[in-house]
Image (cartoon, rainbow, N blue to C red; front, side, top):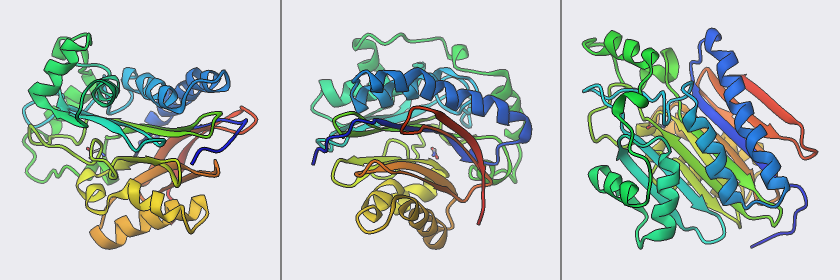
Length: 308
Ligand code: GLY
């Protein structure tokens, strides 16, 4: 289904977790920059697919977030990145997982979707494909921040630390964007460094279609953030897209988060746009950073505190 729409939509998130107060300003600035730099292109007629890739690239380049530069370190002190992009017109998607040394995994995911017969490439194969597609391979320290190195040192040998703790108790966040273009087409992209001290090779919800992202022009598009091991069990993004069929946008997002909490004791958040162009968001983490363009073009930014 493709609907005529004169007013494009764009919503982004910078993660759902226990964002400490002294991180709020950087998170707000980051999500605002992603909308500010991308929304004018949507107004000029850019596709939803181009818009979500563009917005996520802004967030991947920002060391504030757990995606691209600034990502968490895994259990051996390395950065491994996951990303997905999905086209609501065709349900086609591209994804990469456990990709190292590339600043913009979302761009590689798009190339997987458009240049291969496949949907998901992982590890060394994904890196080899990125190189052959012309992506710049960076030295590992280029993606590393002092903040994450320090956090890694703190938790490295802590027997009590669990990878889901940051969603309640410490640093961590994925990024994502959902857009509807002037033609009414929907797209979504999500990108992450995953969880802190994850085992090498661990893949979370982000690049799993229906979990970290889903887009279907007939229903809507959703990007998820939070504790991946819980999100993938309920295919959170697809669950919310399905709920768009019978509930209004915000209620559908709430239903998805309720399912996450009730069925698997999960922690996370979602942003989305339904097929009518209505925005949706919900989370059960202490905070979620997000920004969206109002229909008249003004940008709303917020660190949303949990209300339930
Ligand atoms: N939601 C990001 C992850 O768990 O990998």
